[in-house]
Amino acid sequence: MKIEEQFNLIAANYDKNRRKFIPCYDDFYETATKMILSSGKKPKRVLDLGAGTGLLTSFWVRENPLAEYVLADIAEGMMEISKRRFFGSDRVKHILCDYTKALPAGEFDAVISALSVHHLENDQKQTLFSRVFERLPKGGLFVNYDQFCADSKEASLLYDCFWEEQLKNSGLTGEDISLWRERRKADRECSVAAETEMLKKSGFSDIACPYSYHKFSVIVAVK
Image 1: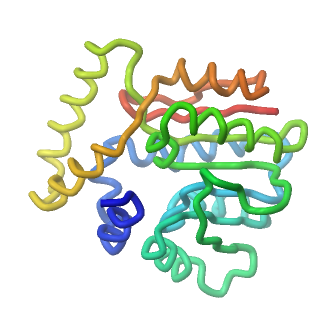
Image 2 (image 1 turned 45 degrees about the vertical axis):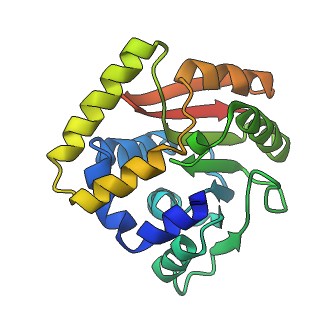
């Protein structure tokens, strides 16, 4: 099953189950976003890659409501939910596209993504990061909220086992977990250190990881 088909299948329950699938939900989405936008000039135009239901953008809108947001995703079912979420807003635009092939037109002050880039092979990640770098002005931000493996196989196994145990006690149904295991087959995680090196290779020089909880980290790269 293609990745867009898998996410269309779970679109209706995606937001409801995020807190169950992500044990650090509040810190991962809300606290990290507040931290990133707490100082300096606010981005005026933001691109959300793999935006899905618009969940990540909703946190950015709370902290930076005057920006223009462009949401890109390959799964039409997920985007329909996002369109309903932002119904009536003239500051949010949706584009159904495969961002691994081309980015939406225009320059952006910030490019953000949540739980999407880890589905790409490393060479696809590298190409994406270079394209993002080209679209950003000096001082522009790339922020990736994502899941990562550890630097060693032993630590990665520990993280994976701990995460699965948390899911078993989260209130998710057996079907939810079964669909999650199927989606996991499409995961192509790298470590935070490996992604940092890719970002450096793409031209970013100021890179930090301001938040990390086992498999979930937020990486900020400044052009």
